[in-house]
Amino acid sequence: MKYMHSPLKLLSLCLVFLFAVACSDSKTSNTEGTTTEESSQTTESGSNTIRVGSVVDGYLKLKDALVASNAEDAKKYATGMMEVVNAVEQPEVQQAIKEIAAAEDIEAQRVAFEEVSVHLYNDLKASGEVEQTLYKQYCPMAFDDKGAFWLSAQEEIRNPYFGDRMLKCGRVEEELPISN
Image 1 (cartoon, helix red, strand yellow):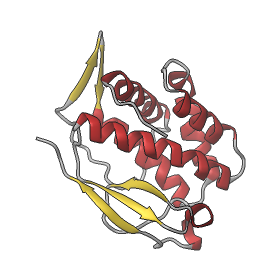
Image 2 (image 1 turned 90 degrees about the vertical axis):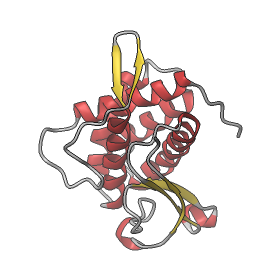
Image 3 (image 1 turned 30 degrees about the horizontal axis):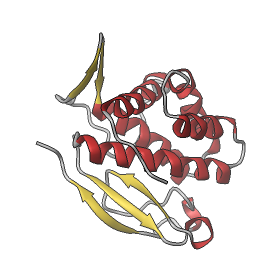
């Protein structure tokens, strides 16, 4: 599959994850990589200002729900994204978020999460707007040995595709350093 990169796609993905963060409950979570400092980099479109760090924070919350094998939390984060996802022109991301929100089965959510991971990684690489060090991690055993990757704020492996069944299965493939 060939991926097209554009500022519009990055903005669309930013909107999706910003909405997820805004719609998540106000309880403090133990999401990896979450910081209390606001990021200084932004992406602007009209009157909307999106903090790129919020996109990554939303993604990490969704990933953490899958690491914990918590289908309800994953569903909650995806459901919060639905309204914004329907407004973007990224049909693959729209479908993946809808699938996560609709799925009762954690395995179906994990399949859809892979699509979200691919798009976020590609958009971050294309834009160069990385506000915190991220690690592209890969599990060769995911999806019947097809393999899949995800992004993490920690170098330590916490596999969202297997959760506690194979929590540490995987390796770091790439470090995405903070962009200047």
